[in-house]
Image 1: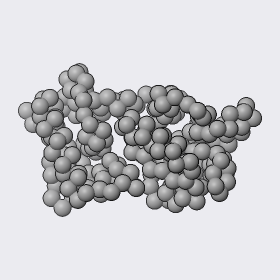
Image 2: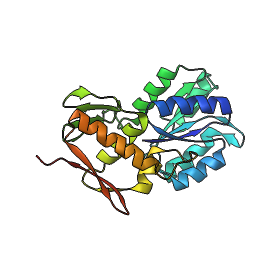
Image 3: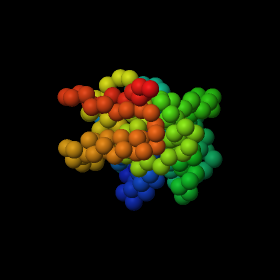
Image 4: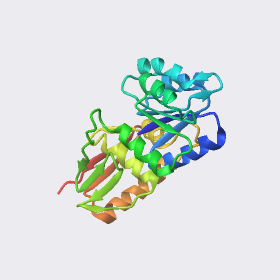
Amino acid sequence: MRILLIEDESEMARLIASLVAHAGFVIDRVGTLGDALASLRVNAYDLLLLDRRLPDGDGISLLPEVRAAQPGIRVMMITALDGLTEKISGLEAGADDYLTKPFQGAELIARIRACLRRPGGDVLPPIRVGAVAFDLDSNEVTVAGRTIILTRREMMLLRSLMQRASRVAARETLIQEIYGVDEEVQANALDSIVSRLRKQLAAYGARIEIHTVKGRGYLLTEQAR
């Protein structure tokens, strides 16, 4: 899942981005409302992490345009404005959650996962291919019921491929979902992650295969018995 962070304080932005990335999400970060709008026009996001005090205005002012551009996006405000009036105004403006600074990293990640659940609090069902089950809510991967450990990039790649099982996933799409927009990506980076993931899945007896589709990308299928 892809998250956009709008935070102008560089240290806070780095902290939040690090916490979110280590939890298994792709995160892009910008520092102004104008840059946020530009990103929203180009990329699809599942969640917006929005500060209120920004150089070009109150984060609340962005919400109508956010909802118009991407109606299904979830919005969490992360701000030092902790008064009851500010909290109420943020939620009534359309935010799904309102987290005040300072906060604990574990709480931030828990609230992000709660925000990303379906409306009404339903948990997304796991994706199952072969012996693999991918829990979209917790980002836990199991093979035949046993939890396996993958690197963050391997997990994000597996998620992207399993969501497109039996369909070709374009290289450009996979790179966009695995890396943030401000990250430099080496030419063979994706191929290296695919190679490592294949070995991991084979070692665990996952019963799925990742095929290379020349000139296009990769295809994940259940292994023939």
